[in-house]
Image 1: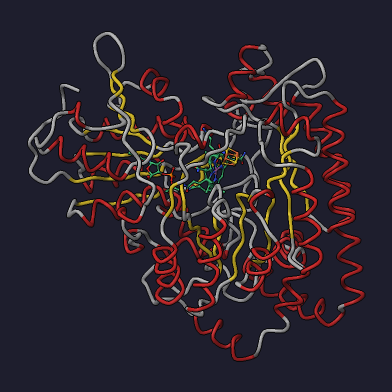
Image 2: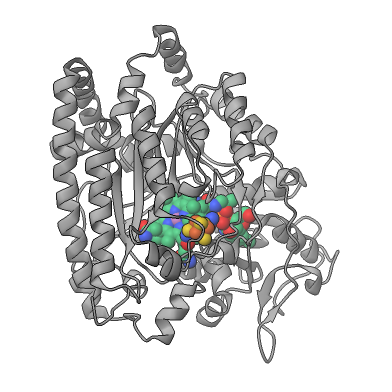
Length: 573
Ligand code: B12
Ligand code: SF4
């Protein structure tokens, strides 16, 4: 890093989320939108320490943003079998311009998913071309799990930050200021003559409150809502007027479990670290009262691991009279749930709870996924409590692990179907992906079942090379056969869901009619597309029958309050 100038009195930091290529224009394969909370956490921390910082989130910048807002969402999906993918977000020229306007001394680019590696590297190249003397760093889960490969692939990157980025970035600022040597910056990896140097890992305290609150003034919050309104969202949402003001919140980091397919314990650590209930409640209160947020996606890896903490949170939401709906799209663990907790969830506005079941076969849960101590009994308990108390449940399943036989996979698919038919639990079945650094990746490498970079296969599957790279082939199955099987079951699940909805309509005709009146509203939002509107109506409302019934019992007063909070914060877009 000889080109780096030290002793800059007040270095300027620019944090970038690069634009991304997608195959489809629509959720869930298309652009996924959310406030980049990792970058926001770093920026808020730096700002509170008086460091000049700017976030450039390409997802909400540039000409394309205005086009989507003014003309409706980009509805035509590019051809799956070609390289012709949809470029989502600011153009590379616009990224270049933004860097050249701000002239940062440190340029931080997030590498959250392996899927976005190509774009991360492209952003680093542009950053180097515009600011030859700047320190170019990357961070995020993907970079943290295989830092060496980023340094190898891209000479423009100076350094990779592993794990939490707030304190690391501040220490790098101090390094540029000449206040500490680089060896005293924790958790970074950089090139040295012979091998890459990895500095000592940061010790991570149990409590996260010292990181401070997020400062939402550092992002163009209204732009996320506008795009969400146009159908570009991070997750499924329960829709009511104004509910596009949805936001992602994380109240904890790290995970003590060691599921074979997951990289969380590698980059966020095995210690479960939390913001205190008071800190979270203050955060939620700001979101609801200052920014008019009315739906929250709790994306914690383990929202319910500490039951007492969860119950304090729930009690605080009720005490402070915070009105919002919420969900857990990242899944919760059945063994951490109890009836009391699920009752509180319903009371505090939970629209749906996703249970991370993973497999319907206990042997696979224990021996292949290593998700001990969760058992099928825990799962069935949660399913039956959900049905009994009227809380809509969904479930995650994963199929296609190296040691799985077809009979194990069929057990999971049948379990998923049974959960839907008997307990109304909507299934989401995913195919196992072996991400670098995970036990699954290691196992796949050593047993030689990773599919590898295969361009022809990629075209046939219609997915990106970075996706196909993670897919698994064994004597029992190939990625193609898994995708086919998954599609077949997906169609069956949709049929069952459709009949369940019809039955719901028969018993609640007024509710159904009232919901159909949303059709016009959504159709208008989506630029008149009938098929998309029907799908949106189904996925954004009709999939949550219990929530609809509850919604119809809201008093008119609380509806008015909700409507007025939906007017928003008056912030400039
Ligand atoms: C929320 C979430 C999403 C959201 C949006 C995330 C976002 N901000 O854009 C959505 C739903 C869109 C999503 C989608 C996917 N996700 Co996801 N997601 C998460 C989740 C649960 C939380 C991420 C988060 O917000 N954390 C909170 C913030 C505060 O932490 P953070 O982002 O890690 O940032 C901190 C540090 O990493 C670091 N940092 C981050 N960026 C930078 C940059 C610099 C310069 C520096 C110095 C530091 C730094 O500092 C931050 C503050 O401490 C993680 C699990 C996890 N615990 O990480 C999975 C995770 C990131 N997702 C994952 C995956 C695989 C996906 C999908 C590919 C799934 C799929 N098959 O569809 C898609 C990809 C979507 C896409 N765009 O292509 C994997 C990534 C694994 C990998 N190595 O690639 C993870 C780790 C889950 C897992 N179990 O393994 N995801
Ligand atoms: S899947 Fe969930 S429980 Fe398993 S290691 Fe990852 S975060 Fe932890």
